[in-house]
Image 1 (cartoon, rainbow, N blue to C red):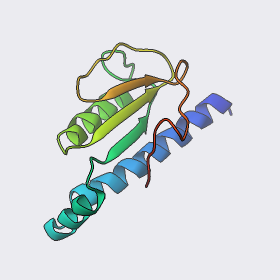
Image 2 (cartoon, rainbow, N blue to C red):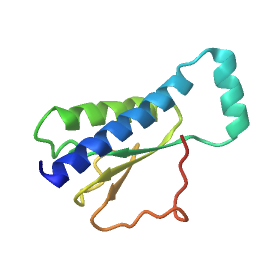
Image 3 (tube, one colour):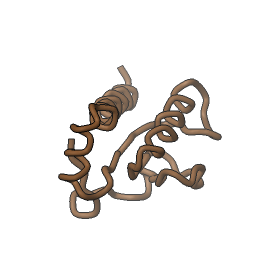
Image 4 (spheres, one colour):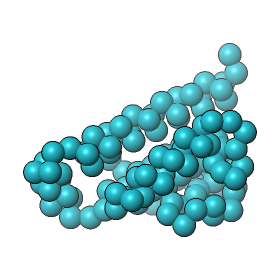
Length: 113
């Protein structure tokens, strides 16, 4: 199998895992959500990976990623979406990052699951 294809599948599965964890926290019982938001005292941050995003999509993944980013942005979350190639900032509610240009290091950004 093509290594790039495998890397894309792994990135997609990881992003679904992270989104699932965030959605579980956001849509949990009100008392649990209140405790979670009180303890963090800052906006939760979501790091997503994908290889397409509207208006530059060739299939359903771009539509699905756009829907997830849009829905999560309404939940007071900071969203960073990493793409393989540079794209213009297509949406005002998420930071678009190019993996080919920007190096993401532990000191420049911190995310936790």
